[in-house]
Image (cartoon, one colour):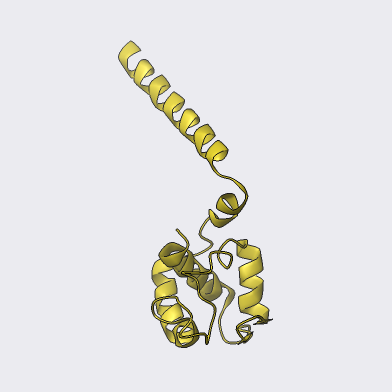
Length: 124
């Protein structure tokens, strides 16, 4: 019994210290970029390939300026999930061009899944 209790205490302590260390190491942009995935990145891959890839490119680099570059412009994915989902849903006029609104084209879940794929693939 004592052996199991000590193992549990050690495990809980390690988790607590690890969580504290991670919070201290992350700063501004890093903390923002470490957003939880809002959907399923596996399902999101199919959504991205069908609806997003033509502008953003299969490599996420923006298809020669046609869409946003997720790889080289780290500020894109430093935004919160809410900001990015709003851009996907409502569209956005940006430096590169116009992101067409996807409401009515994609469901909320498909948008979350696509964002999860993008974050997992290019957002670190």
